[in-house]
Image (cartoon, rainbow over all chains, first blue to last red; front, side, top):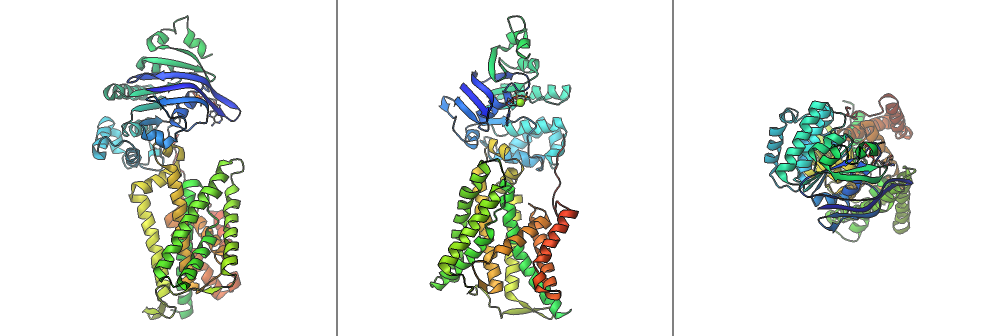
Length: 237
Length: 296
Ligand SMILES: Nc1ncnc2c1ncn2[C@@H]1O[C@H](COP(=O)(O)OP(=O)(O)OP(=O)(O)O)[C@@H](O)[C@H]1O
Ligand SMILES: [Mg+2]
């Protein structure tokens, strides 16, 4: 179980998160919603250990990991697809995958793990020896998702996997995420600005606004207008 | 071929390969932290001085070199931990490491002068003596020069192989490209950085022993222009490129020896910096510098 209690994140004088408490239900997809600058990325980055935490606790399976270095958290089974299509641009697609696997749980042997990915995204096999930075946005997102899943994580954090992609690619990416979450049974947290997109695939949603948790609930309820007359839409204003 | 010309070329290649080693050492820490250890010159000197000291105490030559390299590796760790990391953490003026690494180098130089004296001391012969030679194309070629060249080239190839073919080498590359992403993917970035400083220092140490071998003597001030020439070599070749380090080192070595031989020894080092300025003006990314690979 992934739990956050009274989490505060500050960048110098800028408060990005203010006493946020939430729990990602095990074995399902949780959506973190909010407008630009709401603090979604700060939340995910704090969980994986690369944002300055000023207070509160982060618990993984009941264990307090708040002060654990990022690499150690990754070893505990956290995988994070960071905002802004982060991959090693000057390395080939295959080297990106190999590296991600090498420092992961190694639950599947490398050749099998790579074969599985190429089976799912055949285009990546064709681009195996291309530098990742030269791929199209959608292809890069496929590499990034593959890099997180090839590590056989127990917790998967995805930061705006839809950003800047054509609708058809977004569908493909979300299809993969949903299917992977179901098949693997792991806990997935998706941060999205596109509320409807994330709410359609998630079980539970949390809405942030200017660093505070302003709304939470069953995804279907939130999707139908946020219960009390468009509370979801209001939280974006 | 003209004998004089040939001997200059040979000397140039041989010192050039040592500059290449220094450049390679600078590259290593540049990859992992975008910093350069300007204390490298003092590490070269200290390694050579320690070797002289240990062998004068009756330690076998190979052990003396090995022992000195171990001390230098430990100093590399110290430099990362106490001069570079604090300078990077304090943020703000991000160039603090230039002063702190250089300052630590000067401190080491002072210590060496205090404990070993500031006179030049003779460097013992590690494998061959200055009189050993082979004949190549009808020319006498010093075996010491050949050994220096061979050691430098082998080390450069090994490092290149390590970076290209091993997972840890790839991890070093990954850290150079995006340290935060490397961290999030579970790579032990701290240890990789520490390792890069140790290895960089060891390369400096090896370079120090090799150049002392060619020159025959060491003194506490030795190493100071060497690190600058290594820096010129690294920039010429393209900061961060191993092949560039080798090419840059050879170019600097050759040109400075030729200028030293035909023009004036006083111009020997000056010409390297002229070369540096020319390169920065014409091709700032260096001979083998890679442009960014990015696509929105
Ligand atoms: N490295 C940083 N330094 C200073 N301020 C930052 C930094 N990163 C984020 N912030 C600030 O923290 C706040 C929250 O940012 P965050 O990136 O977490 O929002 P977000 O919900 O992910 O937004 P977006 O949807 O645009 O990605 C913003 O006000 C932002 O300006
Ligand atoms: Mg964000």
